[in-house]
Length: 142
Image (cartoon, rainbow, N blue to C red; front, side, top):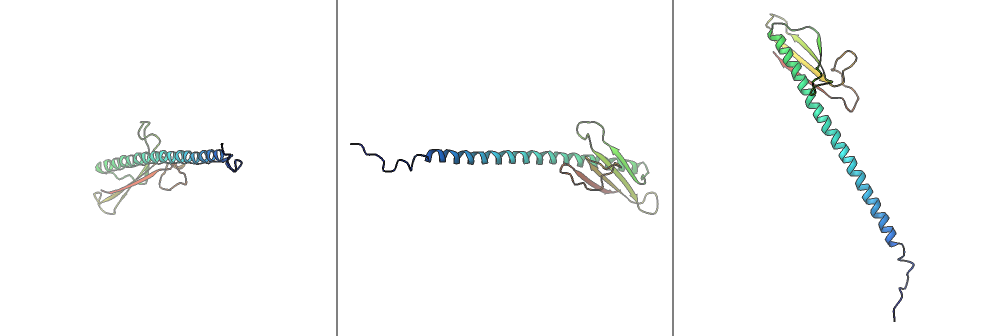
């Protein structure tokens, strides 16, 4: 003789509840993985843009040192827009040279700001409130 379960109605929906729970947990894990991947991609892109801004600022410093070697220290700020080469496209460099008082061979400070979103005047020395904005500054004594 076969025995019948004592309470068959109590165990009737356990499989459905378990399946819904697993779907919710797996969906949450999927959303978390997509968010993590998106954040990682944005971080990598900003890291590359930061390296490009640094190289653009170095190019501005080299230009300023070349001007200094020629015997000139351009007064004010010189704005240079990088050519449409694929590596530094979209970057603007602002180079300034401040010479100490005295002889023409007195020490000078050359400063280069490089950014990917210059202001209306083409300058990069003021920070912007934009998540894609990247700026680097280099200063040398010559």
